[in-house]
Length: 207
Image (cartoon, rainbow, N blue to C red):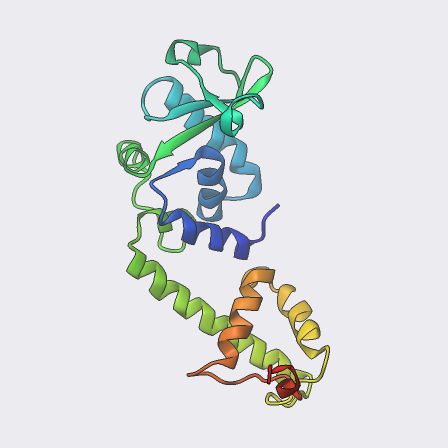
């Protein structure tokens, strides 16, 4: 199960994608629509909308022998899909952003709340970049807070201190993923921040 921070990073990528599979859509939508238990209900609703023609999608059948591991399922076979399965293979619905938006409007589910991760799908790159910048600053602030709480000298973090700080940060699944921490740490060392420095780091600078 992905953490909220991992879902958030996925949502940023989703904002740049023309289409998503219904599993990704459901994961991002659950973040605002309800609890984990509602995931299946959302997947079922999407499936029924596709089968009845209310929602446009490319229906893909899991097939390990096909290129990419999937093959298209002909529309005349869709009526035999049951609970996400066709025969003994599961299906995936590839849905375009504009088509999903149209379906949300027709079914009175639009607009999504601003804090819904799925809403990133319709944000511009500039909006995503601006949102990401604010989140990175939150991450840097948290790194500095934790370092100070451990009485570390910010300009001379001891050997092993970064790993300790990282472990503490990852306890906050709402804000950090392992990669997210690494990116924030790098930013915290560079202008305009320059908050963090490993003790005797000059030893590792090539001469």
